[in-house]
Image 1: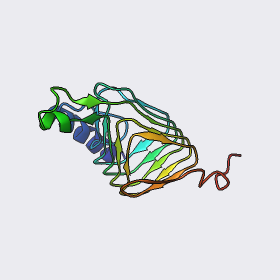
Image 2: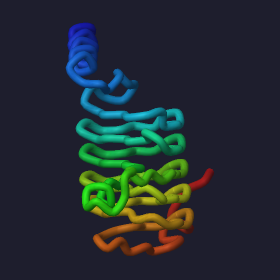
Image 3: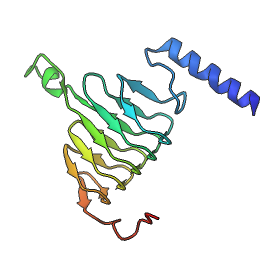
Image 4: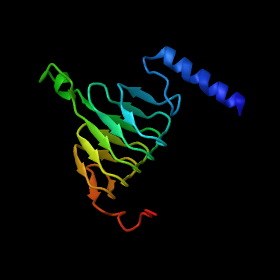
Length: 154
């Protein structure tokens, strides 16, 4: 176990030296930009990114964010096309006890309630997703309250 911890620490430090991404408490290969507010006992899988640079990004406690997830407050398409000189940045809020499956994108302006499941491969657009919802697909489909009677709150 000590060898594994030492290797993980060395990997994390080496990755931070090669990039501008500081070490984090999640995984050496999680990229965090800016200063997102991430709750206790939240897990973020390898190769995921949380971009909070220039916006308020909050992720609640007890969330499970799988590998290859992008939570990205920035949208640069207008700048790229010459329609704006600036990158648009919008806040993101993710509630408590939220599961986000692999290969999802959560875009700026998204507000995800508590006890939600975001199915693998979903693109979450700006807007409010109520508590206990199941969200899936592209374009996203929201089944509001899907988990309301299924979640044990005891």
